[in-house]
Image (cartoon, rainbow, N blue to C red; front, side, top):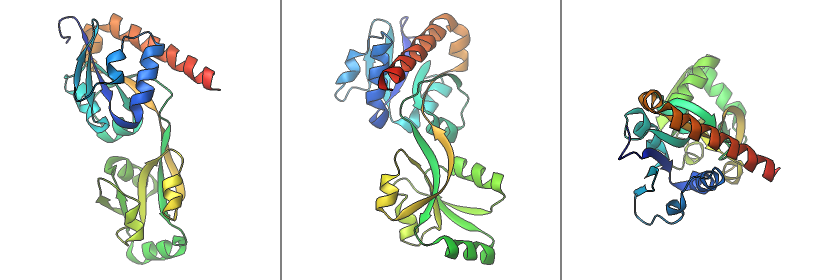
Length: 222
């Protein structure tokens, strides 16, 4: 499961990248190449082969054995629903799944649901959305979007949205109000089940180092 003895570790681009680099450094992992990878997507150190990927692709890399371990947001892990082993909550990249609707539309949306018996919900996360509303016993029609979900209620495409937010600023700026919180999300350290069995000592040691580093960073920020 390794490349010439290296542990294959998938790491995300984008919003989680700075926190990932800081955590790896705090844990004593040689991750200097990640500071400025340029266009390179695979970066080798003496011990680790880093695979730099789109956050939503990271669970697939791990589940299908292209990577032994990874750092990924809980949001994408839940939505992917793939077979990976979660080993540590890394405590950074905090955000939350929320349900939101257009300001002032609460009564109209309730009346529409009573009349039609179904609510239209726009989201990038259909699995999370379906599970949440099913638990509430609310019948929904999902509109799958890949970006700018906030537009859906403003254009009349959907009554509500389910999206990820850290501060709620974008929602407020687009005149949307949060109706309820679905769940919280932070970065997690995950592994391929087969890799954990075959290389348990090294993977569990790395999980422990990352978890302790995450605690130190959190304490320092407090």
